[in-house]
Image (cartoon, rainbow, N blue to C red; front, side, top):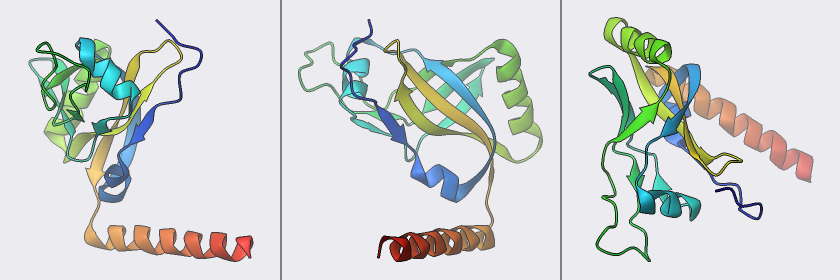
Length: 153
């Protein structure tokens, strides 16, 4: 059920782009229980320590924190439960193969609600950055901030 007046919900995992080099991105649907979408719509989500894992041929997001819904009752959801992600079988097999062979991991990048009102998780096949890469990222970010600051004055 889509709402025309619904604000754009888009929660980013800022740590992902700093810690990892994002190689390939995918958008997956999420299997949620009743009160989770309500908490997502109010922006009560934390992606920071979450990661994805293929378990028995299915893709799950682990450690994704969706706060319990304030108006919820005894049927409220568990904040950090594992949630199944919906991708096609070929994409899941590709991700599983890459993570098994060569130091890749699957990280959640962004959680958003699409125009149909469904929660989607953008995930990425990622490779961990080395320390010097992180320093380089910080330098680039600082330089960009300085340029933006100079342009405003």
